[in-house]
Length: 137
Length: 147
Image (cartoon, rainbow over all chains, first blue to last red; front, side, top):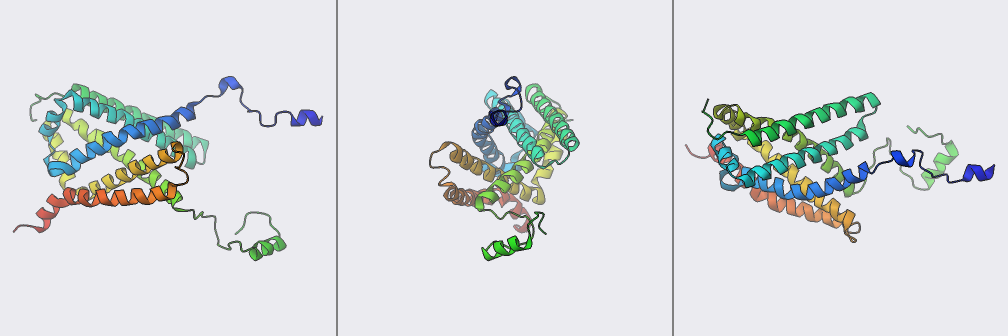
């Protein structure tokens, strides 16, 4: 009887086949994407807000000039995807930490995932379909 | 008010042992806790800004005039000040993120976590002073200079 009660008390409750390393990969992703975002985002902020007049020189023509270069298109696309998933994953953790009811947690996450899909879709579409010859109005 | 079922003699004993009699359950941790709190706050603020920023940039597909009109609000004094706040928040998040990675992956990281916090504080100030200067230069000149 005692034998039975003490056998492997710390055995995982879930069967092995259903356990996943998702949280490990998410933890690793935050660090890898974070490292790349340090360069992409701080570079973006330096160029857009600080150098050469900062925000005051930004207008449609300025954006058109930058996206004429595939380098900056790729920079912005990588920044969009990495930042949105990095931030979305961070917010997922925060929802898990602070939502008290399962239903609150569920609906906040649905809202989060819908907003992530929307932002990624709109942002990607804009970078790929930008038309530099658009009339002013 | 205590939620544990401790008896009076036990409570007296813990008082004698020098335990805190402070009310509430607020944890007053070391600076590492505050860096964690700030990391969360700056992260959430940046994520919400990203949402707005992708949508305002999407206006380049509507028309040049629409985009230019909306982007003008970014050049007003109050929004310009908010941009300094955004850069400050992102810079802290980036520096503290590097610190977190050093704590995770560098053998001396955990031992030097507090020292690294002061280092990123100094780096933050050193970058933000000229950064804020160049970001606000035009706004300050327009508001207080000339005429």
